[in-house]
Amino acid sequence: MSEASLTPLSARSGGPLTGRLRVPGDKSISHRALILGAMTVGETTISGLLEGEDVLNTAGAMRALGAKVENLGGGTWRIHGVGVGGFAAPAAPLDFGNSGTGCRLVMGAVAGCPVTAIFDGDASLRKRPMRRILDPLEKMGARVLDQAEGGRLPMTLRGATDPLPIEYETPVASAQIKSAVLLAGLAAPGETIVIEQEASRDHTEKMLKHFGAKIVSKPHGDHGRRIVLQGQPELEPANVAVPADPSSAAFPLVGALIVPDSEIILDGVMLNPLRTGLFTTLREMGAKIAEENKRDDGGEDVADLRVSFSALKGVDVPAARAPSMIDEYLILAVAAAFAEGVTRMRGLKELRVKESDRLEATADMLRVNGVKIEIEDDDLIVHGMGTNGVPGGGEVKTHMDHRIAMSALMMGLASKEPVRIDDSAFIATSFPGFVDLMKGLGAELS
Image 1 (tube, rainbow, N blue to C red):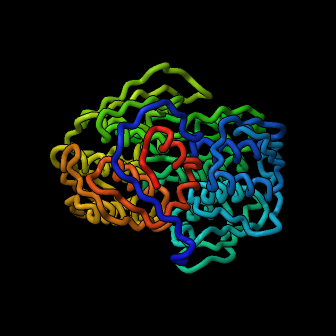
Image 2: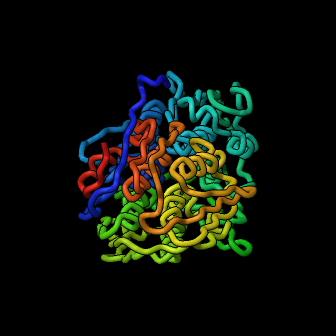
Image 3: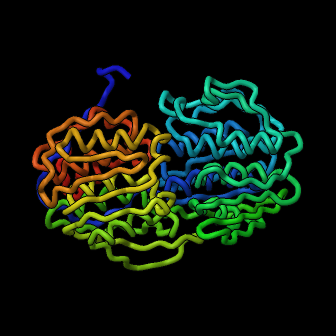
């Protein structure tokens, strides 16, 4: 991307953040609702869909694979599915933009169909590894016909004519690997089994059940799960109400914790236990986060969160918590910078294969704004500077990564000097309307 096409943005300290808001719908649920809706026979309505670029690219892929996908306005979408194994060969490459989730889940769905599809994405997605997804899919009968060096995009995948059920133990805690195998397993006879030594987020299992699949998940070992899916179901259309995304809520939430005198309410945030590692950690640091109006929405726990400015203290974050907050370490590092004492985040290897090398990018974001940090193996150590202690004044390179951009801006709202990011364009991949929403709370962004 040329310098002329960048969209820089700065954040500076001002008054407190106040007000009530609902962040966009959960991205993980939105991707899965579109994919599984397309694999039913009949009509599914989705309300509250996240209309960010990542999810819109998944919607486009479902349309290209033969499902009828309609935007009814106001976050409501209707899908007429083609059934399990019913995808048609797309006429053009499937472009997933910046979305690793959309790309990898659709690879799983396509792997169970006798069609050939080309998978592609932007420059950032083309750098991300796909081999860990393809290994189990090839065991199920799919074939990679063409790929870029290192098992990367663009890639041509031919789905299995007669998919095979497998028992597969994931090499790392990854909802994307697990979900790809389960989506391919829908088209296979018998039982497809996935074993995790560390449980990853379980949205796919919950939504498969919501759409009528026979799936059982049981504890395995100390922290793992054993998931058994009965293949070749006829998935039933089922409406989905998408709750607010906890990963998106994390940004205004931490902003309110570190900007003095702030208090905000975040409406309808999903509190799936496998997604709330950040909230657990922040509470250990002394964060004032109260849950109000708790309820169940489409099988997921939901509540409104009241968040108030808090004096935070450094903590040791165990590696076992990583699967429940892998996308939130960047914004946690910002909170840690404003805490008293040292915060050590352990076992962050997975951050190196996200939209960017998020471990190094997080360290750079803090360093350039005067925060002392260290990386020891896969641990990130942040030396907190206390309330109003972060100097700021730096320009952060976002590396086409939406979460780096938003994390850096939240830091700028509480640092002594403004924080500038080199490009804000990629925020829209997960959080459309972010700047206007934050300004509505009183944030100084320009």
